[in-house]
Amino acid sequence: MSGAIATDRGNCSSYSGSQMPHSCRNDPIIVDLSPEVSENRSEHCCRGGLLSAWSIDPFGAFSSFELEVRNVGDNPLGQPPNNLTLMAPGPGYTCSPLLDTHPSVSSDFGGLRQVPVLRTWKSTCAYSSFLANTLPVCCVSLSSFYNPVVTSCRNCSCGCREAYKSTASCIRPGSLSRSNEDNTIETVECTDHMCPVRVHWHFKNNYMNQWRVKLTISNYNYNKNYSNWNLLVQHPGFTQKTSTYSFNSTKLPTLGIQDGVSLFWGIDFYNNELLHSEKAKVGVVTTEILLDKDPNSFTVSNGWAFPRRIYFNGDNCEMPLPDTFPMLPNRSSTLAPPYYGFTLLFILLFLPLLVSWV
View 1 (cartoon, rainbow, N blue to C red):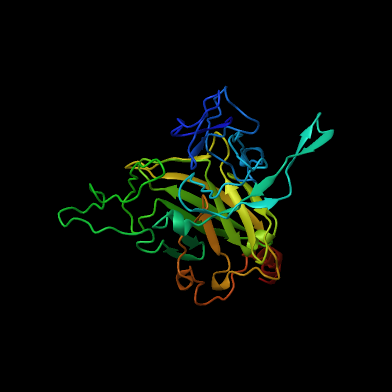
View 2 (tube, rainbow, N blue to C red; view 1 turned 60 degrees about the horizontal axis):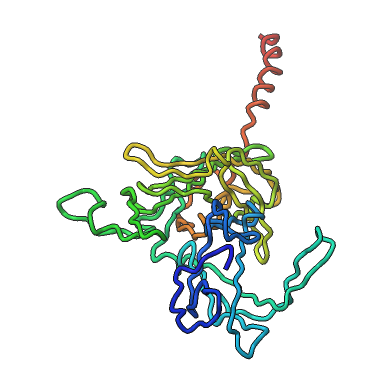
C-alpha cells in the first residue's frame, strides 16, 4: 500500500509469499497519511485526512491511495469490496454499494496519451447531520435596523442539561455529554441555547438599490477551535450580485430551488480559524455583505430579508420560528430609504421665496 496505511496488519501466518503483506485483514481500517510524510507516497495522496470543499480548494478536494491485492484466486479481474464505510471526519456518512462504472482514464506522456484502467467501481457517500450528531451543533439568531428586538436562538436549541441545585452554573463534572472525533470532551459556555456555535444575521441598512447585512459566527466552545470553517447560506437575495468584505465567498449552483446559495469561508492567516471562547471573550469572525436589489422581489415584509437555511461545516443550524422573526413597525408595511437630500433641497429652494415675501 502507498499513500495510506492499514491500522492493523492482522494474522498473516497462512500467507506463503516472499514479501510480507501490509495487511491480511479482510476488513482493514485505512487511514490517510499526513502531508509531511516523504516515504510511501502516491500521487494525490496524503491530505492528513482533511478534504476541502470543491468550491474552496479544488486541488485539496480529492485524495487517493494505492494498494495491491494478492491471492485473488480464480478471479484475476478482481472484485469490489463488499462494504465501504467512510469514518472521517466523524460519523454521519452512509455509503452506497460499489457498482461497476466506466473505467477511469489517466494521462501519460504529459497528457498526450490516455490510459484507461482495467476496471472501476464507484460508491457515493451521503452526509447527514442527524446521524452525525445526537444534538444540533449550531443555531441562528436574527436582528434588524428597524426593530430593537433581537430574535435569539431558541432556548435549548442544542439541548439543555439539568443543573445541580447547589450551583448556578451549567458546567459541572459528568454533565458534558458532547464528544468530538478525538474523543475529547467539549466544554460549552452556559447560554440559553447551549449551542457550540451561533450564527447571527443582522439586516443593517436599506439603500436605494442595495441592502447590507452583517454576518457574525460565534464559537462558545472553551477548548475547541474551528480551523478552515465554512458557512452555507440559502437566501433569495443571493440570486443578485453580492460583495463580501471580510470572508471569501462564492455562489453555488442550485437545482430545484429558487433561492440563491452562497458559500463563505475565512481568509488565510486572517480569520480562517474560529478561535475558542475565554471567560471574558467569545471567539468571533464577522463580515458585512452588500447585496443588489431585485425590484421585483425585494421586500422587508414577512421576514424576506432573513435566511431560509444556514449550515456550519455541513451541519444544519437550528433556525428561529418564522413568527418570531423581527417584525416591521406597526405603522409601516414597507421601509423605503430616507430622502434627506430631497428634503434639504426643498428647504433651500423655498427659503429665498420666504425671505422675499417677508
